[in-house]
Length: 325
Image 1 (cartoon, rainbow, N blue to C red):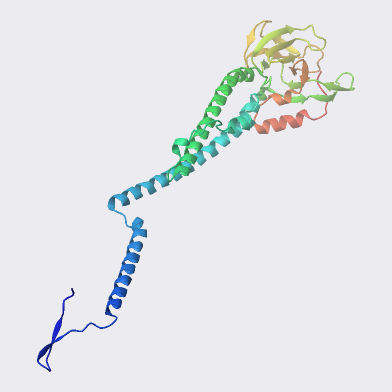
Image 2 (image 1 turned 90 degrees about the vertical axis):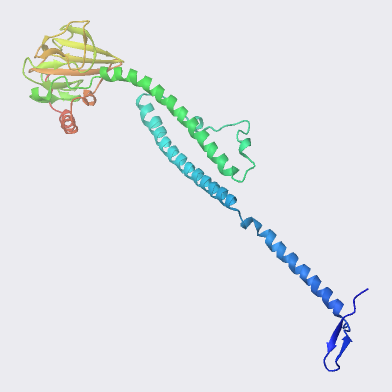
């Protein structure tokens, strides 16, 4: 039973009963309902904004996560830089080192081959930053594999270089007569005028004019296989077998400084300039053979001439003049 309320009426000096107004209950109910709705809306706004309201510990964890993301991005950039450098090494490997050592290049399919089969990154999936972590790990795996392939390739090239160094020491690579001892480079490889018949004839070597007795040097490591005057026109001459299909011949010598069967090194004195055999004046007639074929000796002076000296030698060797033998 609801309580009856009174108020004091000062005009009548008596207490009067408070009468409830019609619709008051409805008003109170309406206000209460609106209050509930407003409170619910405020709680909803608070709920959806809760993630933005973080504790100090959550803030610290978020900073750590942001730092890790930054470190992964920096790591990816370093991986890209390493891949760029490695690509340059691979380019030199295929197009310089392997060409130089006459070895087949490594196919790009082998260098760039991925990792087939099972998903090796399954354990890294399902996290907020899984894509970043998986990509970084995959790039590291690919880079590691490419480095392993390149390392094996360089090991192979090192072995080839050991054999190549012997080849480079053997290939004729200097002039048989020192520049300072030369009177002139008389005649080169090609058609020249024969000094005796005056006919145009192919000259298979190069003539180095120098005084009688000037030292003649072995142009590469090898073994003396001839030192005699039994070949027509050459007079006293020496043949050095350098191996790898190369031989060199030194003709019209005054005398020998080696014997057949002797091993010589590049730069050793093997004889002396003369004018024996079919010769018009003291000079060293020099020939180079590869697999039994005479080739132009001008291509084998990189070990003793500067670029300017070689250009001058090339110019003189191309003049179609008279040979000395």
